[in-house]
Image (cartoon, rainbow, N blue to C red; front, side):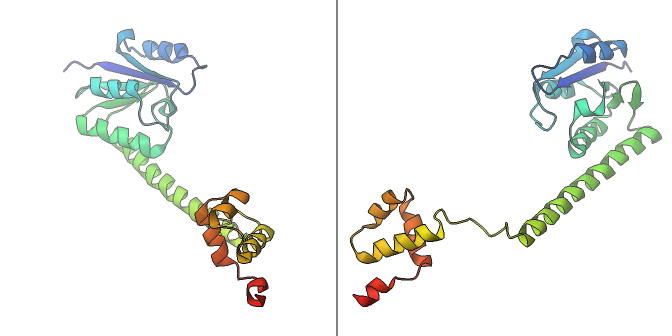
Amino acid sequence: MTTTLIGYARCSTDKQDLTAQKAALEKLGVAADRIYTDHGLTGTNRSRPGLDQALAAVRTGDTLVVPKLDRLARSVPDARTIADSLITRGVRLALGASVYDPADPMGKMFFNILATFAEFEADLIRLRTREGMAIAKARGRLRGKQPKLSDRQQKELRRMHDTGDYAISDLAELFSVSRPTVYRTLKRQPATSTVAAA
């Protein structure tokens, strides 16, 4: 079976150059016309046309060659998704000079390690999110949407409304808020004593 080397290179910004990565791939035996690239696309952006073309080009028995794992993906779950696709199709993955064959025990171990790290990273993200929310709640930062008007403005809006001289639309314009905001403010603020006295 003929093995074809398909190369992939990526840089995150337009200011970065792909020359060094291309040279490294050619040194590893990848033909220049078999190198696919993405320029100015971050690894977190899964929509990478060059990578899609490289993955479409590899066939069973071929090897996808990338200079380093972080050029292929920026997150472990993303790397794992790509690795799963390669395993299903019987494609080897080469990170620099190290080749990982999913059919080989060492290659299988590498892909399993990727899966473990992917799960670990996902768990860490969930844990950090929960911890962050708990800290924010303890500091009083998770109180829902804050009112658009200060307490003083809310009281003044209520006082002006209770005089009967201002329509809801007038108050909305005066305080530079929407009509629903005026209604919510009136609901929150108790009626002033002016009405009671009247």
